[in-house]
Image (cartoon, rainbow, N blue to C red):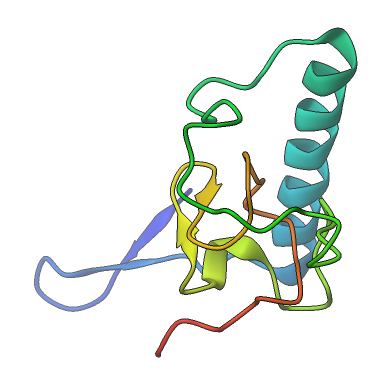
Length: 105
């Protein structure tokens, strides 16, 4: 990422475009799906039973893709890198469920 000089020694980071963000999310989802298909969990994602959430994924209609701008990474219940305070088992940052509650800005 290129940085531009603005004044005396201060730097402004270049803004990521929407297209770059969506492409990054698609690549991440692809890597997670490929790992799951091969039976290999991504590094850092907690195994089932080690996350505090107790509600089954089916009950909360959990999905491994976002609902528009709503996704686990911006939810108050999300515990990085892959747990939830509500949903049982591991979750992905790009996932979504009915327990979604946006973090305060």
